Image (tube, rainbow, N blue to C red; front, side, top):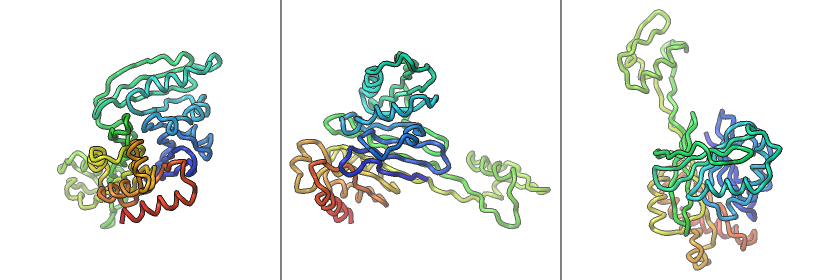
Length: 313
């Protein structure tokens, strides 16, 4: 369902690109420097999910903006408290006198507490805040095939961890000589609303829907977590476990090696063994360490990843 690629090299700031099967758009998590993020990928991006706006997570926003001008559609940006003003100020620092008002629209969604976010629309050339509203919802983004939940973690500032959840799919297992047709969709609809008495006509024969429910197979939707900068604290780990347990795949920051625990505590980052331990506690099928301190060389990053892998076993 989700195909994920870390677009930043190990010595670059973090940026993750997510693609969805049979879906025309990309999704970006964080805008760190990422030389392999190309123009087409920026233009095809439908939403940008910002964990927080420390420079290593937000510095490349201007490049994405540069490539998206002229796509003539809405792009959603989500992030923590302050993201609306920060996006607006970044955009308004440029001159836009030659840009059409329909070149692009940004809807910025600011998460300020669990279950609530504020939304505004920014349009060129003035980029004023329009259509301000408060949204009471447990998800920050929804598409036909999936939705995105979030958890607010502590990094001495709010930082947002994102959970991409594909919806379950209802599949019909054709058997007993049955052929596909309109009835397949009718049966799916009846199952979704638990209507056991709906009459389903297949060719010349009529069935009650419950007589056909045995043909239904539920394909569980995949779950993808992206958990970036956070303190390796008990409070954060409780939230991570609550939201991300049983994920199919998760990317988690491993900023420091275990021997640099002092730096991790001072800078409110996680470190190799602690990131691995919480992934193990969440029973993540495929846990991937990302976002390493630039103080490390290539060999040290290998050591860090080995520490993570040992600790998650």
